[in-house]
Image 1 (cartoon, rainbow, N blue to C red):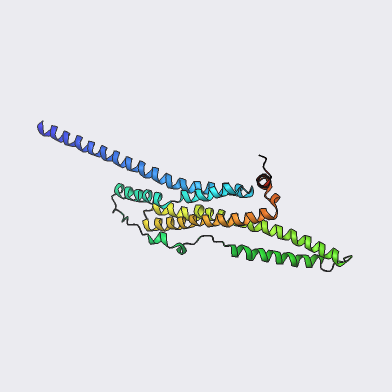
Image 2 (image 1 turned 180 degrees about the vertical axis):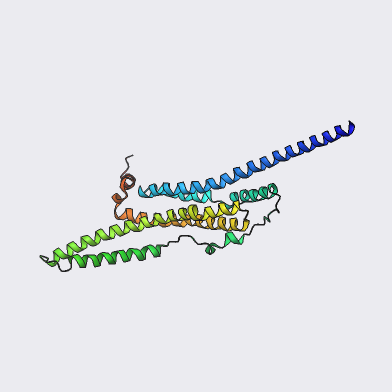
Length: 266
């Protein structure tokens, strides 16, 4: 009877150990799932940001655009994300009884800005296309009105000057819009191209791939700051040329500017 009691006690101890092990695995699963959902949620937030930017740019809400660009940089933060990624990889290795991953940070991945492909745009790019658009306008005018019978040279010159002014205003508007679209392209690049690769790498335990994807996302996110400055400069040029072309925002800014410049009574 003594041997039987001892055997029962041993079995109960094994069952308790197994139960405790099961609880540990369950806690590991819970922590891994929570951190993974956090990383996946960032991808969703970035995609949502793309839609918000579309509306903000359409409404010329440059302050909201600036905030959205800052939000992207805040979402893609290496110092916050890398510990979560490493925690997932470490906990997964412990749960699955696999070798613990080497967690040394390869800083070079985050230092070489030119190593990562993402949308790029400069003022030179915009100005080159701006001039090309004006040249196409001149060609279009000659094609349509070049052989038209004019009453006199003044009528021809006046008509041409008006069309040229209209073309220039439209080209200025297009230039600012393209600068805004560049910010959206950066967001789209991170949300639709880079982030899915990061999630896949983390899920498969590929730390090297995860670091590369995170570095690429960080590089694109940092680019949103000069991209906004580019947008701001070209939107300002549009406002200077035609305040009302900015719709309600143009009316607000024009009214505010008038108030600032108006004589103030003592």
